[in-house]
Length: 286
Image 1 (cartoon, rainbow, N blue to C red):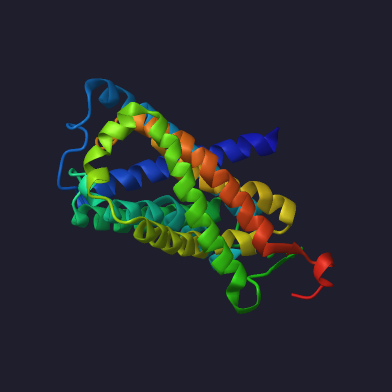
Image 2: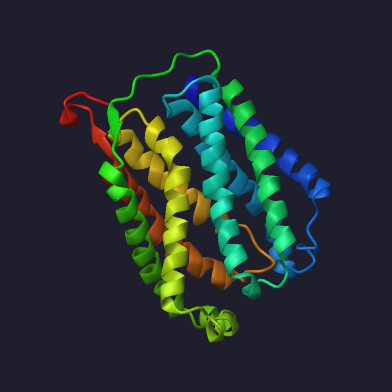
């Protein structure tokens, strides 16, 4: 019970730290438009409670990573920082760059500001988190898995291509909702050819792999990675949509929540299955 209360206290403290840092960066790097003013009155009323809930969930996942990954010290800090910044922000920003015409409230400069904003906030939050969990004092734990990218990187290529096809197919889930079809009607009329969309998602697959490496290398066991990897992908994509947004109506966020839940959890499982092997199965060699 004492450990549970200790963990909750750390999560709450990190939530407060993240909230304060977010407020400061919002003043230092303000966006071009007032996002709150662009929301409906209902979304404005729900924004702060749901933003705090989303932050609490994010910091819960951060504490879990800081606690369970085998790293220590600066390696732990850099691994968690890279994973959070990349999986929670960079991948989303890449889509905002690509589909910018669908989100008129966001300029390209705004997307760049969000990347810098997140880089600083997640960096400082990770640093505080490492201190809270005693990550600078503990010993680095032994890994019981072997990371296998395949000779000449064939596993990486397989993942990137498979991700592109799978993500494209999962995108049709959102088409069930007429409101989503109407929302993206303007973009659909000028959308790129299929080969360009698949190529873009292959590039995104490369980024998913790169920013997942700290977790794949940091997990002590394959069993541990099987829940850590899907968890962070799910929270970093689908769960972030619970916060009201000025550029995505509620029904569109709900549709994407379903889409991302269906797609990202299997992607996380596939990453672990494809790249992590038990040491015993590899003859004990790294």
